Length: 389
Ligand SMILES: C[S@@+](CC[C@H](N)C(=O)[O-])C[C@H]1O[C@@H](n2cnc3c(N)ncnc32)[C@H](O)[C@@H]1O
Image 1: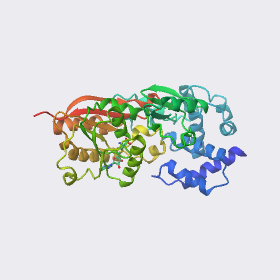
Image 2 (image 1 turned 90 degrees about the vertical axis):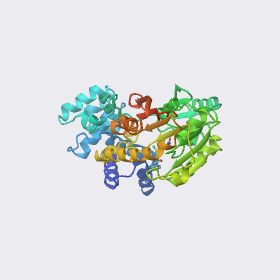
Image 3 (image 1 turned 135 degrees about the horizontal axis):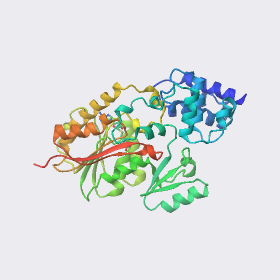
Image 4 (image 1 turned 90 degrees about the horizontal axis):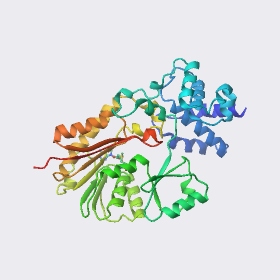
């Protein structure tokens, strides 16, 4: 009976869920309207809907219920009452390896193809291992934090006291189980930033020097600027974004991290920004470009169902138009750090080719940060320099 009610709730959520809304926004509203659901009901409902979307576009012509059972089998490693009720034979094998479980699914559903989970693998950046990338959708990524210097002891002691198992990833980075209630554990302390592992790794490409003038051109709430500040606090910093609200979040985060000296600009980088920046020249520009976000879809698997491949070209066009307006503010020979959280070649290597063919930029380094192999986001980062006269 319980499992049957869980299935009914899942169906209601799926029926009411509007496409193009992140699940993380929709679900809290749904739960507010369904106050009879206790915390365990909510936890199970969230697990079912997220796992359902983890199947991406596989078995698209199969019934919703059957797709949910397949997803629950592939995404869980421990027995649960839902699977035991609807698929008792599979529940006995839930601890098998993912490869073994994929083979079992294929026997029951001969139409099942791993490639259908994310049907754009032919457009991935070439160094991405397609099979590993596809399989990563069946795992929920970890929660990563970057501890601010000086607070390592306090953070680890608090986590240990609360019996939270964490993994040290080096450079102040900790991996925590997803769902760890950091807001409850650290209600008023600003001892760390929540930031994905791969995002933290982009800092290795910045290499700032004292007193330089840097621009974080698509700053959002300032994740990359905070990394830059941690590497070199004595910088002149300009941050910009098209969204005023996100820059307000940036102010708050900067204040908490002790970053006080910066200039903030509200700009649309698809337009000429000379009125705002005409006399600026930078020693470094971070361009964390708006992108498909396809490298982060194991966190937001509902995005796979919403995506259409014409959007890849739209993002590439947007990135090219932003690049055109940004690069002229770099001093000769100084670095542009181009970053995306996309797994698509068009937004990554092709953009580096564009910078090189159109503006004569020299590639110092470029890399796919392969988060898919370690329960983290997959990102792209390149360090390029304009030609010296
Ligand atoms: C990938 S996010 C940046 C993330 C941020 N750097 C961080 O580390 O958290 C891309 C940002 O580009 C901004 N953006 C999108 N279109 C833009 C435009 N035309 N001009 C300026 N910023 C834009 C978005 O508002 C978004 O905040």
